[in-house]
Length: 339
Ligand SMILES: [Zn+2]
Image: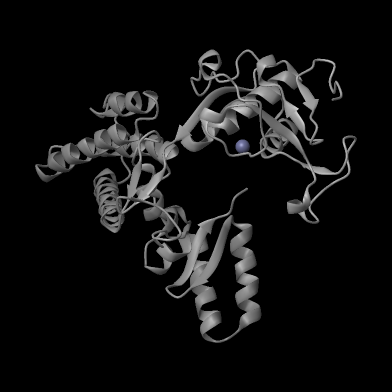
């Protein structure tokens, strides 16, 4: 039917939907390592979810049909709705511009979704759409794929209700390289808790030893280079964490034997700041100033006296200092306000 575009990348078919002509885009299939010559495109596919075997022209705009009910918009091509792929290209280019440095997604989105995003965006802008793709593997739960029928998935709220902190959940989720399947288990949650406790104890010991002493400029933590080299290697977080814990082991041993100087402890704390800048593992409440802590106590007293207006006023004061206070069953919790 109609020759829809000057560049001929898209056309309107008999079903009135607009399709992207994949043969017009030489790189189609590149991201998913598909060879179009071998695969022999099979005409058109109306569904957004299709297998590599049925590779074909995909819909940019779907003409309205009965299944769509009252979902539909008027357009120059008649009533219909955008295809799933075009929604992402439209949002990304509108909000981030024609070129993106890093695009993330699950491995299941490589084909057809991300392939389609590239084809339609680059055909439109003539620029490279994405420089790096980061595709993460699927999360398993207790060794199984998550599914509704197995009922084996947890929301963040479920985990918080079981008594885990957000920090523990975060640690459990970041400690495996994004390309590997992460197996979420409650044993793993407990390990995360233990790991954080070890870090917290280590920092406590270092602080005590360091006191007010200046960081020793000549002291370089033995694992420092290896920690950052691991992260530079495609974000190999598990290797990086292994280096961190090796450093913790070694310095704990040195402290046991009174072989770590105060200036070295102070240098290690500075090193930790660098690490925490990347991993954000330090307990947030550790960074709360004495002034905010005093206000929180004052607020606790106001609440105990059911003086709600003072309680609200103090909450506002705390917020002005950069912290959000939440009332939980374990008392008031402070979280840093996002600027
Ligand atoms: Zn998308």
